[in-house]
Amino acid sequence: MNNMNDNLQEYENPIEYDKENDVHTADIPLIASWAKKVTGPIIDLACGTGRVTIPLAQAGHQMVGIDIHAGMLARAREKAAHANVDIPFYEQHCTALQLEGMEQSALVYMVGNSFQHFLTNEAQDALLAGVSRLLKEGGLFIFDTRFPSAEELLEEEHEAYWRSYEDEQGQVIDVFTSATYDPVSQVQKNVTVRRRKKDNTVVNQSKIDLRYVYPQEMLRLFSAHQFKVVASYQDWQGHPLREDAQDMVYVVQKETGM
Image (tube, rainbow, N blue to C red; front, side, top):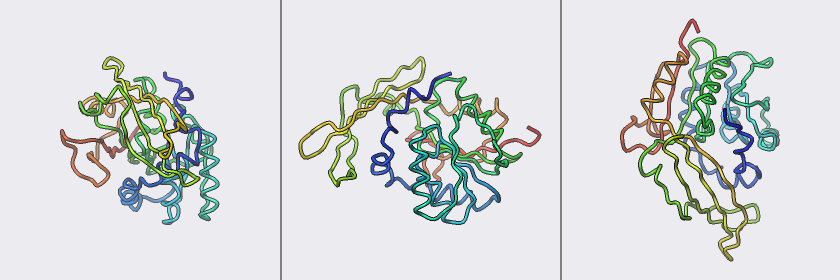
């Protein structure tokens, strides 16, 4: 089983992480639409700094956040307090999930392609077994992962521009990435370099490994853990999964009697 603590460089600065990623909100409406159909606590796995947890709490849902990274959780608690919402946040490894006084949920979700942090079959099995422990019978698990297209897997091995954002000081930061893919392990090794635009100074460099899973492989994984597919999309707008997808979004249900 992979040691996720060795794959967390991207999350070392939670404030800068928010500056770069808070613009991403496409997943919130779909999660919210499913949240309206359930009662009781909703669990945000790999919740990070609460990017999705907090808006759902503000909408009146009873939220719980779980993450492995203490710094991200500290930032989430600060943001929740600032937003005047009461959310319990727990530091847990998602391959060893326990209720720890929480009640089982009718909805667990995990966004931001966090599923790709589980690099081995054993880690994926442990994640889904833990999700099953958190869910009531008939409960839903919603998550996303990148689609293993040729374009995605064969990204540039040399550095290529990806995107830009403004840091805490208002400086424009250009983000560059490079990647190499191992087709045997189905793991892509990524290097991200962030440079200050005005002088090209490197302000941060990080590495992250990501596992890719194929759609048919995913169905076998669900079956092994007694989940049935309720819906599958190619984006958070709910478009059906097709061969030209960039992402895969799954809504799966814990089968009764499990």
